[in-house]
Image 1: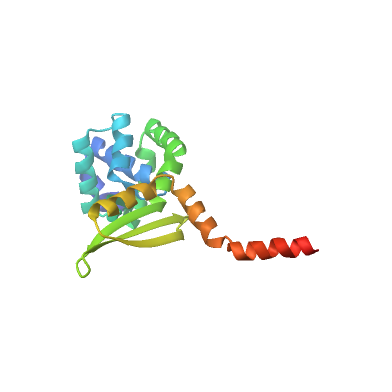
Image 2 (image 1 turned 30 degrees about the vertical axis):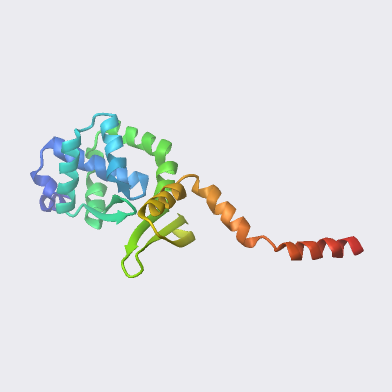
Length: 200
């Protein structure tokens, strides 16, 4: 453990900086979903754990230290823990104050379902130069499995933005409506079934 500590950049950090880094690692680990900057910020500022500028600097340092990696998801940048970040958390988790760990566990229990739903709903658009059109891609996943993936072509950016915004509103109901429509039997078949049953 001493060897890991000395090799880690945490060895050069002050106690407050170490606490801040462990807080972010613990939050993402317990949520078990890559978190957006705004989701991390909401938790941190809610209980005044650090200022906005300290948080952004800490996240940047953690990416440089290879504790976190980021990727672009729809219109958000999301962060997940690297293997090195997991090792650091495994060894130093107990250095994070119990009060902070308790608040994180409570926050996760209250907010994980909403954050998971947002993460599993995607809506993006891009401009297709060849045809002067906008391609909109909407998706819904559950436990890393794709439930629905739709691609739509529209002629204006405003239409593309509206589709993305509307897809994220009540997406589960939209998914159900589309699925019901696709698996519904044609009227002709239903009529035939009614007639057959009437003859019995």
